View: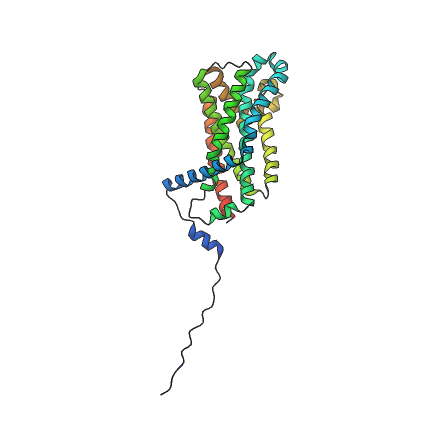
Amino acid sequence: MTASTLTPATRTPQRIDPSAVVARTTSRSSLQATWVQILAMAWRALKKMRRKPEQFFDVLIQPLLFTAMFAFIFGGAISGSVSNYLPILIPGILAQTALTVCMATGVQLREDMDKGVFDRFKSLPIARIAPLAGPMIADLLRYGIASVLTLLTGLLIGYRPGGGVVGCVAGVALTVIAGWSLAWIFTWLGTMARSAQSVQGISMMIMFPLTFLSNAFVPAQTLPGWLEAFVKVNPVSHVVSAVRDLFNDGAVTAEVGWAVIGCAAVVAIFAPLAVRSYSGKM
């Protein structure tokens, strides 16, 4: 009787594609699950802010510094007195502060990506928009603090808004919405740039023209014709004009509608671009 030796069949080791693993772990979340995941990421960002209070320096110091400095330096030259200049200045400072604060969103996002934090998020079965939208929800706190401090500084140096409490609340809310929508531009830049320094440099190149080539600090009709034409199409000018109408008159004018439409258009364009760029780096 002969005994036969059975040798197990050798299996060729298969190479595992990391992108396939990520694809398997990234499921399509429902709308409710996506919202829960965004809030979880927002809570993480808030805890990070608590551990790094220096993130609030720009929202605590800048409104006080710029409001007082611009009012007393340019008030007499532009409007004849500080009190006459404040109804023009305060909404402009609000827009400038919102742009500065939302610019930091892209820089911090790039820093987290450089540290490998987002590589961990990509391996989790969560919606791809959650790691981007979560910190932006948390930044609403920073926008609100900056806007309220700017308004309080204006009140301390003599600003008396004709729109009353309701107009001021609506103006601050519109500023927060505008800051959140513009932050999607800098979030997209954060996913595209190679370093936090490059994000900051590009963001400054965007922020200064949008702010100073607008009607934030001077009336548009005092500018040269070619520059006035640019100021009228500048989205920041629409936000500033809308906040002025709310603060000074308490009126919901066409500028308010254009500002809201502009904010919605920015989110509709740059939110998908940011998510696509973030997903493409998987």
